Image (cartoon, rainbow, N blue to C red; front, side, top):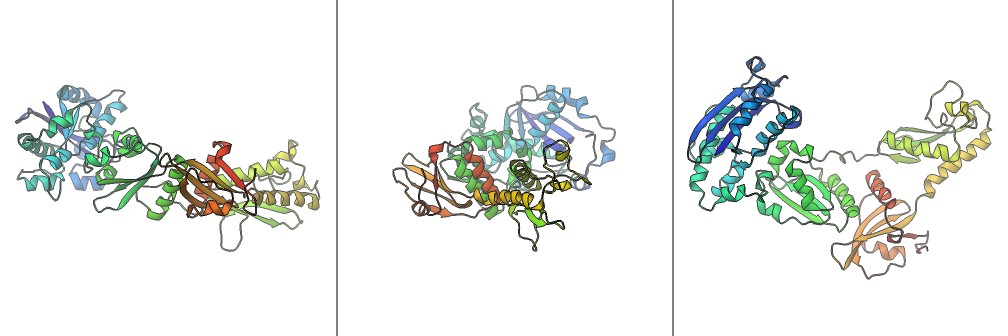
Length: 464
């Protein structure tokens, strides 16, 4: 027996929205044998654009039951049934979320009529419910209302059952089938061929455009996590619905995957990547001499007039860096813009500052310490190569940094020896440096084995 379900909601994804209407048609594989439908009070405002789509208003749901009042009925009505819907993960995720919010759970086997239609009735120009019903002559009344859409889906399901000569429904219901977790427009074959290897993967829309770029140590496992719902951000159904194809590029290891992912996001600007789209270095550390002759250091936004000593992606990163330098070189936090005080800084009051802020230290002595701190900004700019696991057993990767600036990465035969910096550069494809890749590389240096990093002096000769 099958429970054909359709819901209307306050928005597009379950984590932030609620159900406003539900309809369930019980289907025995041949015909509809029972049904249940009700409006639901979502206990929040229905946005005007949702009302325009569904016709469901706030007044209509004001006296309707809340979900907890119909939760037991829905559980009992669908008990032992296969949960069927057009783009099943949308409806299922909302209902599952509603039960979880009540401290309960909801688990049913699932079937998606979008995926089944693509297999049983291949070659149609569109598999949206409205277009599909029109193409197979199924009447669709009350579009975007739960009962109208659920009844049409039930009739569509009956058609699919009667024409499923290759047993696609039975295959989809098998316990080891991953069909039900996949986006409705993604071919199972695209998912099946994914490797359990490190690399960067790309989600493409119907036109082939890249809409999301990700990285993984295990590509298939990571993508399975997206689709299974274990990653909350992928509950946004409009993202899932746009995925038509997946491509990937193997990198051999996580470091190169991180670097390539960062580059590709900035090159392609996929609309569903958010974290790395801010490519600018918005903050800088600047220095100036005050009226008393003290050399001051401070954090400020980037501007076309002043030249920064260093740049950072965020104020937080800049402040953390400068705080460490203040402690290391005994600088006054007030004179570095880290504290505000009318006279002495707080550190002086507890004996941690020598007192430049109250002129207890001469300008000459204090400025000498500031200059040492500034000089240390540049002294960290080493040249080095990080070696890592390649894409196969005969290969190794190289990530190259020259005088503190990222140059790129590449691949070479693992038996090739690198004696000088120029030889290393010949194996590397150039990529742009930025604050994000700097963070990735120097974060990796803290956990990589010493024998995987080769340092070079100013003349390009390997050290050690």
